[in-house]
Length: 138
Image (cartoon, rainbow, N blue to C red; front, side, top):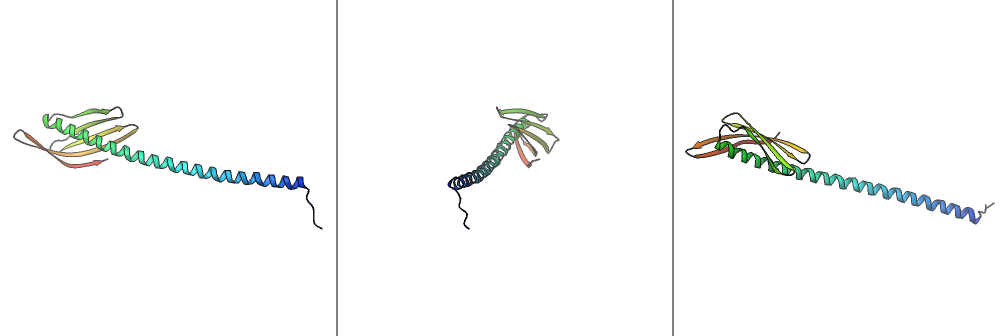
């Protein structure tokens, strides 16, 4: 009535259950590790993009200021390219007159960002006053 199992079949069953348990735990652990890695990479990319965007913005402002300085000294000045460091350069092109439109392109590592500003320059004697009318990323 009761079926008796031999020790070898019981040992085989226990071994099989142990292996299956280890496989399930390993699969669960692998899923957790992969999920955490993906989250970590995503967080790093977001932080890098935010830092790159900030660096490009400040580089664009620096190029804008240099272009304004040159434009105040030479009303025929039409643009330039500046190498700020080994990873960053910018180009400025100037169009229009009163107000001038300054288009700034910043190359930082593998990213390119474009900005545009509108500037009114007035002269009072020997002094130039620059008024930034607009400044935005395009």
